[in-house]
Length: 107
Image (cartoon, rainbow, N blue to C red; front, side):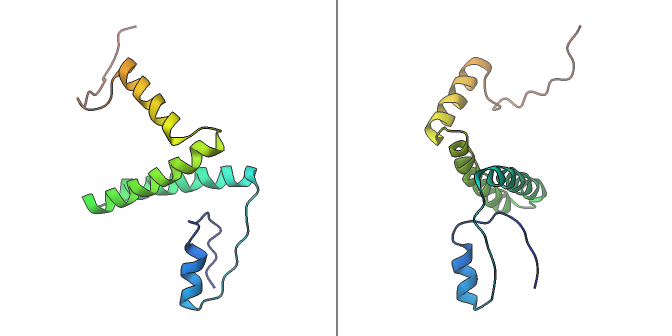
């Protein structure tokens, strides 16, 4: 039996049950959940980096977005507040639309 030891989406146990396979899970306490959420975000970011097609990239970005939704909650915030912070930073410092690549700054 393969061992995964990783955070999965809430419906995954139901999906596995429908296959008739045996499995085990546990509910993480908050401190472990935070650690595993960060690991999962890193995993999904790597999968985004490895994506070969636009379709694969969008799939991985959707996973990252879902993890961001979960992460803001553990930090006592919301997606709406996250979006406000994003907008504020974009207004003060800009966004990434112009593809500017900084090479160096004189000391």
